[in-house]
Length: 376
Ligand SMILES: Cc1cc2nc3c(=O)[nH]c(=O)nc-3n(C[C@H](O)[C@H](O)[C@H](O)COP(=O)(O)OP(=O)(O)OC[C@H]3O[C@@H](n4cnc5c(N)ncnc54)[C@H](O)[C@@H]3O)c2cc1C
Image (cartoon, rainbow, N blue to C red; front, side):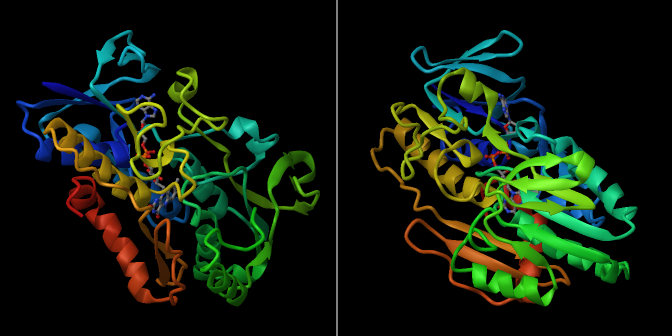
């Protein structure tokens, strides 16, 4: 009987567990998933909480209800991985052994790494999204600045998407004329994906969203309401929204398995941790230079589950991840864009369309029943 231990019950970990449970019989494998909270949160919904279109409670489910009944769930935090002994220590003191380890611990928000961050709002966790909603509700008018506190961060399109959502939100409230929206891009273009950037720039200009390119937020000066960049520029704000700096999970750093950012060096095709054939990595935890996104974790998880299943069954057929990602961005006014790309092919520019907005809404609906089960 082989033991598969999965750390993290987010997008990647849940899909690996569910697909593997279907592919290998319980007599051949014991699957255990360890999650720090036991609650699964649909993170793309945070933007809609911040802009008043979603209730926080609709985004949370018990992880147990999302997992195949053949998967054992332990609600605890992994604190140390010992690859040489094939063991993982949990916060409770429990020690778990494994034959295959899947690390799917996502990304950690580290606002403390950006001086002055306490003056900023964000929509990268549920509580902060609720606070941002209150701040927007009571905002009398002025300049709203949106910036990025460090690279890499989850869902690279989300800050540009939220600039468009601000335009939509204040238009609906009839106060858009009192608001200046200013978007700070850390790159020499307004959008991370180069082939889509001209379209996003056109959309921003039509919506009268101001932008500064190559503005990497270095620090915030709350007393003067100024945000400063590494490049030496400064901008005044009345309301500030900053994506907090991200790092990999603490357990990765404490186990000496991460690079400087705490991301695990990972083979971009096999999704195994470099130097450890029995450690598989999915989702935000990898150091692969592609979008840290649920869509990425979703495609990677299927590859990892199939490869572990094949190995347990004695097959040497290995599936390789080709870098596939498909995502949708909501540009406000019920219109959106889509992007499909992989390691070899950048996304083709698409048109702004209602179709892609509704596709994004559909993914949200299918998330719990099809995506997490690994059916979609
Ligand atoms: C505002 C926002 C909007 C987004 N929009 C989109 C979108 O439109 N499309 C898209 O594809 N992606 C989007 N994303 C990104 C997406 O949510 C993440 O990239 C995705 O959740 C990553 O999946 P994951 O499995 O790697 O990590 P996560 O889903 O974050 O899960 C990590 C899990 O690991 C657990 N964990 C962490 N450390 C430990 C430990 N030591 N022991 C045990 N458990 C641990 C956590 O409790 C958590 O359950 C968005 C994210 C945000 C914040």
